[in-house]
Length: 177
Image (tube, rainbow, N blue to C red):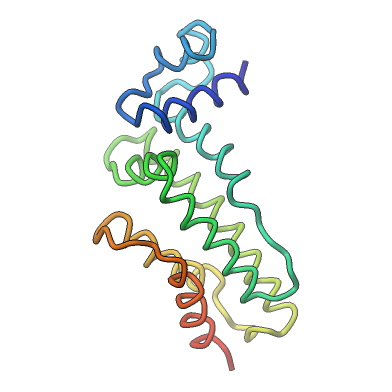
């Protein structure tokens, strides 16, 4: 049931958009009863975050090439591509809503898990002496992710293919000894 509901949620998000992705619509598409969905996820937002987390884990694999620059470039290029999809757009729009505790909890949990995956790449770079031992993995990841999110949410500028490598170079060259 879980897989069917999550797949139906992502499908509705990508084909119909965020507004049309209601619990009732998801339940119909998944062939389950609406109360079953509410029992498991409590809110529409929890359902959407769970579906997007599951979907983005597949879309955003954590590379391990042995080179921190390559790993970060691959991960954030995949993130840029994901943000350009309807599912990525829905995720970002959910992430801008403030004041609803369930939604904020889901947003915080979702992004914390994704940032921690990226921080692992930085820690590997530190362990391989590609970066100084005192490098702050969280700050380094935020320094790369921030401009991507700003372009999508604030300026609407395109996420052109050369942006991520330029951001990674800018941040890593500033962090290197």
